[in-house]
Length: 208
Image (cartoon, rainbow, N blue to C red):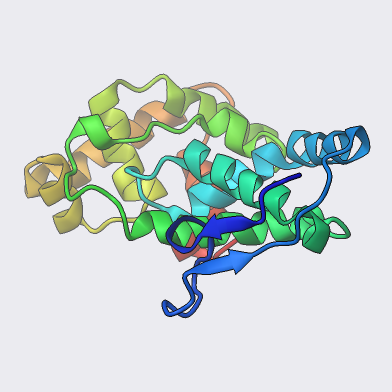
């Protein structure tokens, strides 16, 4: 049998706190169920990662952990959701993303900065020009990339960027401009195209 009891803090997001557990229907894990569940995660793993990344919009969030917990919850409640597992998987990712944001460490130092693979996350939705630019972004050194992400991916203000990554406030703008100029010098790349992509998908830039 697949377990039907899930702890509220981990799995019953948004429920009344007086309800400590959610009883999910138990079921016998058959080879057919296992194949169907694996097909869901294989087909929608990247879109689930992208959903977690854009929903959290925070470099301290571990999007892989969010997707793994979401898939575990999908499997546990399979009898409720097997008719439309993709939709429920993405809903669970959004729920776990909101939960993850409430549990982030209070630090902004590099140790807690999650480095996303933009090629993997956006390959199936980006234009050729956007993909070339994403590849160029991936070649930036760590400090440059954090600054670029702060300003163009996560949309932080100059003050937030300065405070969180310890860069002089007066240097944030010029440094960002130099990074984007370097991206523009890459053949086939466009800093504006990359910005438009992130604006399209990040939660604060139009939503998922």
